[in-house]
Length: 104
Ligand SMILES: [Cu+2]
Image (cartoon, rainbow, N blue to C red; front, side, top):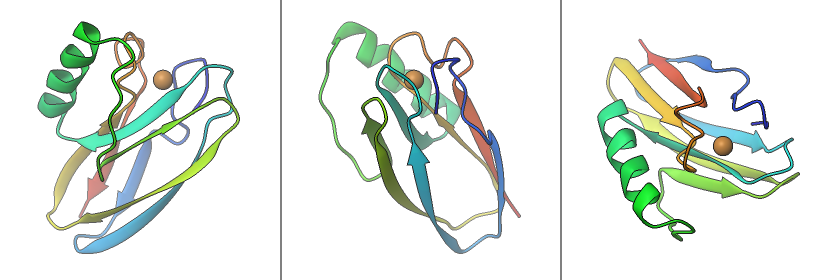
């Protein structure tokens, strides 16, 4: 994750049923997060965060990392299809900070 509002890579291929451990590094100078979900859920969550700046949250589908920090996120992809992920810090997803996991 970096301050150009990008995930690298922003597209990941996995097989249905696989459990993936993501190792994530924030190489930027501001906090970023990775939240896994459908694009509809991500947008709803982003709207909530706009209303409550500085909202603290910790759920199994997400991680927030400060500048220079490294973290992990484990997620099982059960079904074939596309799962989205995004940074829900206000303005980041809108600036393009999102990606896709293609499950086949
Ligand atoms: Cu971000």
